[in-house]
Length: 303
Length: 120
Ligand SMILES: Nc1nc2c(ncn2[C@@H]2O[C@H](COP(=O)(O)OP(=O)(O)OP(=O)(O)O)[C@@H](O)[C@H]2O)c(=O)[nH]1
Ligand SMILES: [Mg+2]
Ligand SMILES: [Zn+2]
Image (cartoon, each protein chain N blue to C red):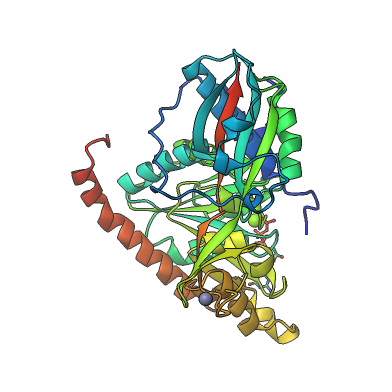
């Protein structure tokens, strides 16, 4: 529980230091006007088929209000619940593209090998471009310590009870990191296949990691994550000889959810498949660098 | 699972809802919210009971303290890329009821919005 206002926000720590909740930020946020819904498209509500329900969006919510409550009024909001997070994410994304930084958000269930993969990736790519890392965990500095041992700058975010990183936390971590032009920013999200899918951090891509010890059906059970990702890494492939894991079935399930999702089979510990993964990253970094001057030329709002 | 605790991004969602309400209150000057209407897509990754629970917790110290939460469920809808028909779906891994294809383009029901407020 947030101690300042009791707002229920569990305390977030960054490299061990408590971070203020965004509800207490003094700087007001500027909003852009909401895009109007596509003309003529009224969403079908579930209740529409069930006349017994009390709410009928088709006939207007206002119709359900008792007449005669004179001082009561209706205020339209019509905003995405995550509008605020999306705004912070857009700020992060603008900053990253302006500086040619290619950012990846690594998501998976706990223990599927994100940190192991990051360490290996850093070892393979550190001579090609500067790398920085943001580590998200509920507790401990252990993953950041593993990254720090490779020599690249890292910020550990501890989310406490929070089960995901959000764009505000990541923006703060970005300010504290020494970020360089034309570099790679790797963000390891909290191990969780559910929540991080909803929270845009401003990254170029989410990358979902599934390890072969988790079972083939994870894409069906946690579809949001596979839908939100641009690449899937199938990790721990070195263990396949000892398991009954059916790769074709896992891929079929993943492609049911996300038909064009590219998949790279890797072993973070043995190194197989890693060249294809680092090539994919290097291509992304080149695109981020190439897109940068164009952005600066066309967007006068960047300072 | 290392962490057996239930995922609780509904807490974050509730915080975001209260923030949006408070921001709106500043601009539209009202002091109390009596009802909050949300539109939650059936495909959105939201557990309603959990959201209600956290909304009550988070709203405690806000102008939405006494607000009633009304959730309008929006049905999942998709366009089948194979047979080009609009279909209703309950999950992301549903197949098209007409042709059996899994290649669907979700067109509705994956979002979550605050629609409107009743205020005093
Ligand atoms: N056999 C095998 N083991 C692996 C591989 N990658 C990671 N591991 C092991 O899996 C365990 C978890 O790896 P981590 O890198 O800590 O996983 P993580 O996803 O960062 O975990 P959290 O941050 O706690 O969610 C460790 O014991 C690793 O050695 C792999 O490719 N093959
Ligand atoms: Mg880790
Ligand atoms: Zn079809």
